[in-house]
Length: 581
Image 1 (cartoon, rainbow, N blue to C red):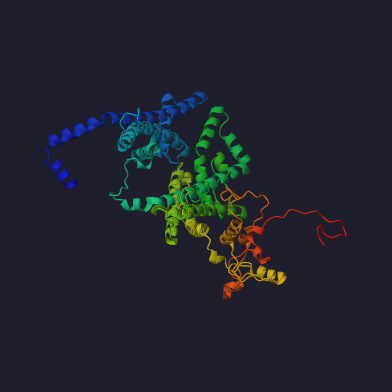
Image 2 (spheres, rainbow, N blue to C red; image 1 turned 90 degrees about the horizontal axis):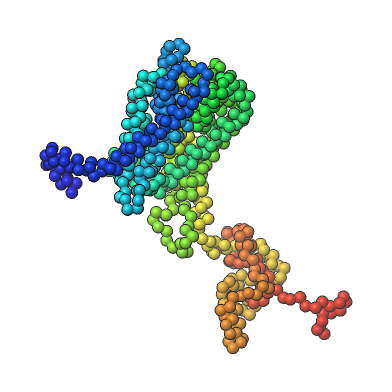
């Protein structure tokens, strides 16, 4: 049918094609116009928020370098920098333009949230009776509206002191808007949203979707993201500990930069915006890849070389001192170890899913919940390591960049080294951990086999035989009257038959009444859980190697005699018991 439809469309005249296209645009125009407007409004709100902050700092500054036009140009440049667009500063002391490519990652939080909110509002119908807007229309409409406003801002900023790189703006702005719009659409409609995807089943990257789709791919993605979050948490701990230990140098550098409240507020806001970058730098440091603080420098746990004095800034003042590593700096290897173990734990738990509480005993599991084999579990753990490496590589690439020329041309971790180290740590520790967790959960889910309990407490049985002089009262052993002694449910059944011999007349409804005898003392079952295997039964199949309980070594009694007997009257000292002859 697809071929027939295409032939029919090709047979149409150009005028008929334009008419058909106009009809389709007319049908979708109200929804598409709303999505375009939502994306444009999101871009305007983000730009306005940056402009308000910059204008407030400009008004409070006692030494403004430019007028309101310069302040708005600075706001536009910071808004573009928050999208990862590199800037070029022209008003330097030497007159040589200096690149500004280190993006404070916290600046991207506001644009991302605004675009996500716009897509979410466009995807939600205004009334229950209103038709649902297609997901593709929502995503492309919001992204196009946002990118259009971003293009105008980039063109306007080319004549200011902070000039953006138009080539980077051409794809950084649509990329952030596309990711945020997809996140907003999925938050409303879940995974069933008809969003555009470059990895469709019939697309060029269908193999990627096959690898990351399904239960195994989802589990690998969760495990990889969990490992990346553990690394981020460890990096945050390292940054906090460094700031606490280097509080005095950081405080001194903060006070050295400016002595007016507007300048100190600007420095504080910049330091807060750079905190996510510092966390990623700390994670790269823990991985062993380290980070650069200038051309020809490298800071790792094994050695630190930061070169000449760095510019005064609170976060740079908390860097480790130059020199070889110490046992304290090498102890940060516990962070990637924890990340690898976390990835393996998540993968191993997904390999053997827990039984549903509402599922009947012995019921067959669905095919999608079937346990994985060892090779499949190892493959999922390797895929989780790949996900963790990719996430860390992208984060390291976004957290670094130049702040000038020569000395400050290279700042931040090397993205390929950080991603490779994260993948290697997760692979080396995640695969064994996943296999171990899978084996443990598989053993925990395996039902207890009564035949496997043979041979327990053989030594205790031998001791009971020697002390009591009786035979082994185990299942299948001969009783004094030559009959096999019943145990377990069979014994209870015979005991019930003995009670039934007393007559049915006086029992009434006691057959169905529960046993509420508070004086009943049943043999405890915890002996079986703390017992040990019998080496004699394991070697030669001893006749004593049958399932039994430690109480079986006592003289044989009928099941109904396992009751606590009330204490009788006590005889005075030197006399026999009452009633005795």
